[in-house]
Length: 106
Length: 119
Image (cartoon, rainbow over all chains, first blue to last red; front, side):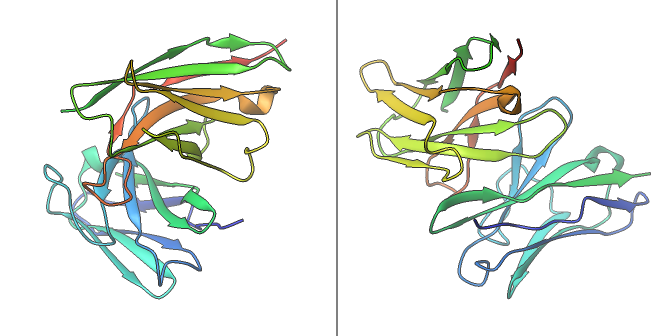
């Protein structure tokens, strides 16, 4: 079955740039999406179609994709950005989430 | 603005059938895909399956043999049944919509229902 691979954790200091990667064989042909999930809450879409930002999402969140890797970048990470981040994509067998990355900002 | 409200039994015994329902308020029911997603405690998200207003379904291959998703267009509701549950099915279950506004993204989520499987 199709898998999306993320690092389990990323840690940055406030104001630094955080980068979270997601690798998958179908990403050259399929869009990547990114969700932010804070403790006890439902996920929130922060990036869609590789690099687009939904309304209401701060400009410090950006996305890119090249080959088999998609990247979520948080420029000038803030303490309130501390959360779990999941990439998501599709393939012929359905819809798949990455394993998630815990972002620590301190 | 579409809102999702979900409900169902929160405590099951092994081998029982999980049953959850999600109601759609405030928007169109047709033209969307409606999904179920789950998250075991401390773990990641897993897509379970989806249905559209005409009843066309797609399921996660790993769960397909135990999952049934159905729709009741008269009530703007869709439902999940997962048979023969075990402790591994303990999770928060979310209903969600794919409106197409963000292409293939799940854009609206229900509040989540914690389902515990324990003897």
